Image 1 (tube, rainbow, N blue to C red):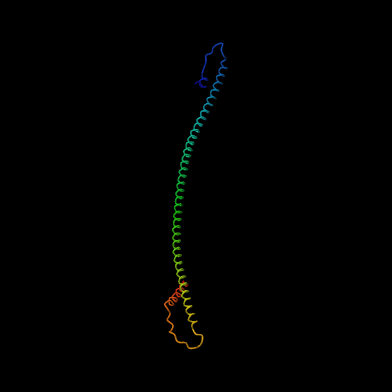
Image 2: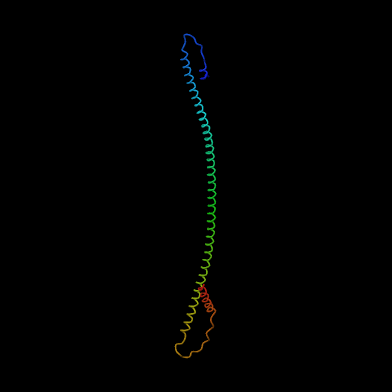
Length: 192
């Protein structure tokens, strides 16, 4: 490539009739100046291109780093989500298991209470029936005794005349002793 220096240093032979050497020199100088300006522009443009190329390299490197960071963040995000899902599933499973244990224990306790209450109710019912039977029996014996006493009282003479002595009144019958025992049982059970 021809440089501005080549143009400035180039000399031509003079021939007659030819061009004026001053005009040719001036024209060559203008061409050399323009070539110098174009070379300087070219050099400036090449420097700008180098700066831009370097910027593009940096941007590409940054872009790769950002891509890697985004991919890493996505992977980490997925891992965190998976871990959170796993923990949530574990917590839910543990809560369900505890709820089932609590319900099972409550059912066992309820069955136990119902069973104990049923046994107690049966005992109380049996005791009530026993007491009712004792009362009925006592009432019956008392009425029988009362009737027999009424009969004896009505058989007594109404005047003051001496009456032939009859045999002494018999000692209390075993039934009367049982009546007394039943009365005692009723009195003691009502205290409880």
